Length: 115
Length: 112
Image (cartoon, rainbow over all chains, first blue to last red; front, side):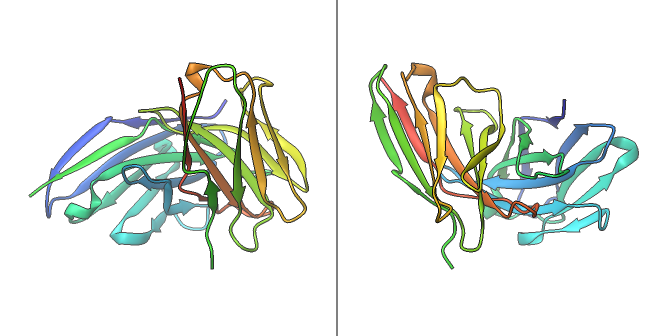
């Protein structure tokens, strides 16, 4: 069964510092991978997705993620954190095939940004 | 272009009652999925509807059921509510042939 692991339930950075949120997936077949952001009391907003076209994926708000098959990882980065980046981030995997849309989510990482 | 819309945004129910949540997918999308997000947890897949049929189902009991209408909108029904059903219920829409999934703002259900 597909599983997604996010290392670190809480990450704290200073404004302007590098953001690194870690995600590993378990599968013998690289799935489609996603990062979503959730602001307090809101739904999920898609940041970016990996669908095997390119290993480095650029998303919205300056975020990007690199797919590394050898490490079964899909870590999310942003060169310079902004106060508005404070939120909870979820990594998710979709095994695709004939039917998409069954996402398996990680437990989430809460990002705190300090002035 | 309207995104995924859900109603109601908040509701409180008593144990044993039944609840119906509603979702309208993003314009042009034909597939609706439902997720349950308990406090402090990641969302968990409940089921997916396409062409008015349940296509995939997660590990949820039969108390959870759904429906999709010809206009692609969907309902999630939960019977015999338990305290543990208290959660944010998220609707997601997509194209059945596509892999981009958009979420609504969710419906907060509190069972007392």
